[in-house]
Image (cartoon, rainbow, N blue to C red; front, side, top):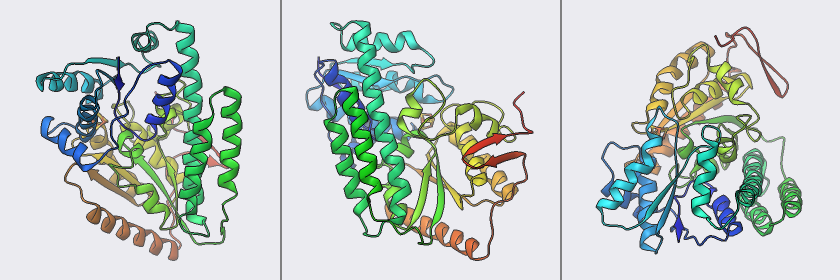
Length: 383
Ligand code: SF4
């Protein structure tokens, strides 16, 4: 058995570690490239969501390298994500590839199927061993998320341009070498200390922007044109609404992001009172939370034809108007070009700078109290 899987942010780091612990042979597909996108676009339905096309391209490249087993995440609906594995399986079979598709269901919704999927991956391992391996690899990936979060907070203040990116690579290397739980703990401390040692100028003027939207676009730098680095280099402090381990973790408490799903749902409630699939409700809730946390604006990323984000997109103008809070929605597909994207971002940043100069800040019309580091939701209660 030779497993392959799609790229999405640092999921490769997590799965590489996990499959090594489970003694499973795996092939990492070539990094995302224009060729990957071309392959996916050529074989996927035209109106399929963009992430389906890119990940299909990953599978084709992995199969061409010799993989015979594909790992794909499942979903709980109501958006199309739950159909990705089956759609891709059928497309690839029609193309003549011979393989087995293993769908990994979300652990919070289907814990038994989740473990069973990994039992298929590593049949010789006991459930106890599989569970332990998942736990340790997950904790390592969570450290990676904390590194990414810190990088976003440090980059706008760095004294020497590019130093945060260079130091991030060193921090990841430290973590990569850690295997035992005690080594992971030590690597976490060392990696975060290393990032803290970057010379920073805290007196620098800076803007604060929240990034919200569909998880694949937020997490995969190739498809979002490395937006975080681009904005960070423009001296913009960023916070992201989705981190990988928050997204896959079963707790719903989002320890990396720091705001639980329940709090996000309550924040979104005045505008969107129920789950609409994907990150639709999170996009609405996070936007309101960022406004209350004193951010200057929000950038919303969504794939073309994404159903949950289209719902959120139709609500965001009302939030922007009610709270006097600038929001920029960027829609991505295979036709999206970097130059056009940068022009739109630069115009948005200019707007935020001029608002700062005029002393404008978001209005607080709805009843959500933000105190210090914790969000206290009062007044609005979910029915
Ligand atoms: S969240 Fe949007 S892009 Fe992602 S699978 Fe669902 S519909 Fe497609």
